[in-house]
Image (tube, rainbow, N blue to C red; front, side, top):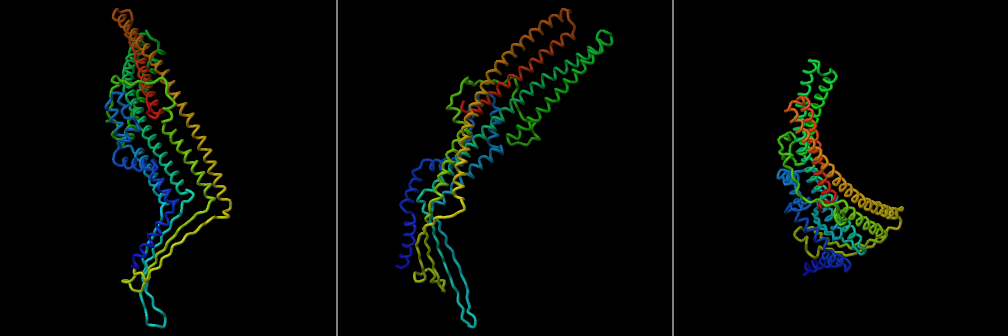
Amino acid sequence: MKKKIITLLLASFIINSLSPAACLAIGNKKNEPKKVSISKSHKMREKSDEFKYQYINYDWWSNFNDSILTGYIDKAIKNNYDLKMATIAVDEYYQAIKIQFANELPMANVGFGAGYSKMPATSSSDWGFATPAIANYELDLFGKNHNKTTASKKEYEGSLQDERAAYIAIASAVGTTYLNIVKLDKMIELQEQIVQDRKLIYELMLARNKEGLTSTADTVKANKSYIAGNSDLTEYKKNRTKLLNQLAVLIGENPNNSEKLQRTSYDSLNFSGVIPTEISSDVIMQRPDYIKAEKMVEKSGIDVKVARKEFLPTINISAIAFFLANDFGSLWSTKNALAMLGGGLNLPIFTGGRRLANLKLKKDVYERVLNKYYQTNLTAIQEVNDTLVSIKLDEEKYADTQKRALLEREDFGYSTNKYNEGTISKLDLVQVKENVLYTDQMAVNDKINCLVNYIELYKVTGTQL
């Protein structure tokens, strides 16, 4: 019967520690959709990687009609170490929520101690055993701890946007790097033809110089042009190797094997997506940096509330159950038990201005974060507008370059007919051919710039295309 009394006493402490205000707070937590959403969504993240593909709008990449590119995007999602760190960071913030939420709950400790005593000038000695149980609860009457938990949730939501931004950035980097590698493949192919033609031009001029038909100065210029073409070829190859190494790191592979990375040919590139000429402001508001800035404003506002509540008293409820006996077998009997339940209120009177300074600090942080939010909004608009302008003008430039390349080919066709008729020399024909190759390189560069601009628009709109 006495044991039941002790049990009821401890149970009474737990019930009393959850005062009506505290029970209301916990009830609100259960009814709060955000908490349920965070808990469930985080568990779903651990079961499936589907959210990662949603981050990057994986279907958008199919517009390039290139399985090799989408394969690299998939590898980056699974293997990129920056993305793994971003995902781990999200879990860190999630655990921080749980740690903070623990401050809203009662805390209980139990222990066990044993001792042996012998009094001086006597032969009597005895063992002693003790089992203390201590519970404490800070009554969150003013909601300060609950506010701290809410602020921690805002940081978690912000970390989700950091993670999303990281996935978008890596996917964009993979796409941009891949396209530039394809571009360099074609540029190297054309440059090798240019080098061959310049070598032929130099050899023809050298032969004509020996016959006195071409000046030595022109022959030297031809040799310089040939050497410069070789230098450009070497530079293209160097840049391609560096980009291949970069792509290998992005997809989580060893750069030592980067030369074996597959890619499509330039002539096979075919973007079939529709690029909008205008972007709605609603799309800009879905950017990860915009959403995070919004969450940080909300979090800073909560921090100001918490700083104000630091001026209010704290209320603690404590309970102690203590068992002490010389005989281990009777340690937990009611005759050896002591129980206590009590509460206290604490209000700091003088803290050297710490609380006032902390309140002013949180207000300053709020103002700074709010201005960052405004700046993020303006930057988002600027980046979208800049990209739209780049797309429009680069597409116009590419169209003009295509026309110029077509005219150069027509000119080369006329020159070929003249050469066949014997009205111009082979040297003249080869020089015209170099113009064709040069404009082809310009067209390659302009086309890839357009495709890279599409990826940039994908990135600055937060994949919402």
